[in-house]
Length: 144
Image (tube, rainbow, N blue to C red):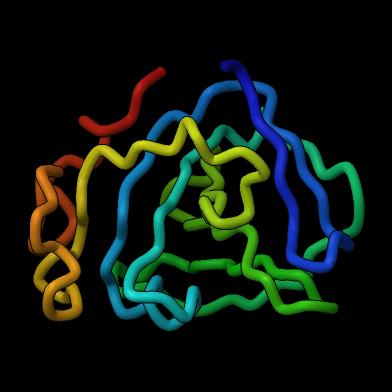
């Protein structure tokens, strides 16, 4: 598969990723739930160097995460779709929200993180590894 494309709901923002993701997981933290407006966020981790904006420019919102790192949410100012987020603790990596990917058939999360914060019933029947918080060494889930 190398690479994939995506964009926002209204089409004002488009992007391309030239390589396979380095990680994918479902995050149930309060931040991901609130910013996505869903029960959890499926996050696709890519190298910043492999990400190209092909249309538009994202608006940004910054805040502090539980870890104390600075988080930057990137979204479409026209339709409000959250497209990316970035964490100052991993400057070479950007998170693509899986819902913005044109053909998400490759999206297969490797774990559920912050499972202790999952909404009731959301993890029922899941065979993915589940971590109550962030895994002690999340780098074990990153490839490449």
